[in-house]
Length: 178
Image (tube, rainbow, N blue to C red; front, side):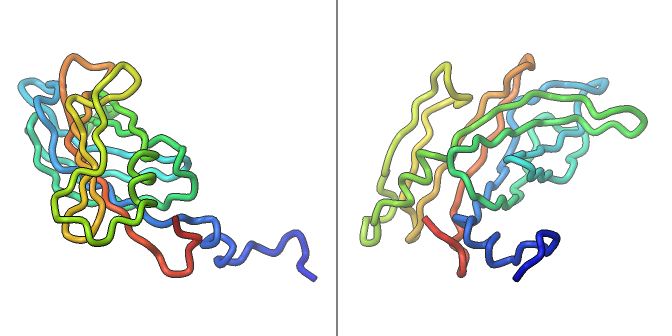
């Protein structure tokens, strides 16, 4: 019999996990200036207690990150918060805006049996509205045998700026799965 102090085995953690969400931080567009003439931006994404960040790109308000950040997903209803910061060497990093996005529509598309669809088929479209941070229509697409979603997020609580991202799913062996 296990004592209450015994740590839970990793299998029980895997059983609650649906899989991994790869969030590709593609680029920033017209980000706010926080230093003299430019900014040194980086992006963080947060889901529950997980927090990941990109590298800092020096002196660029239109940075190209093309960086993959991977989150473990146990609850598809949990929103993901994206925040852009300006890296400062001698003071606290300045916030350059934030956006929140839902992955539920993406997860719903993954749960459909889509094998055999023609490449480039649009599964569903999400439109910008007051309830989301989309800067433009976002399509969930079947491409190269997988479901992907590109989004352009308008940053809130800042004078300007957008961040382009792409979602992709990774199934993990031993996981609960979708």
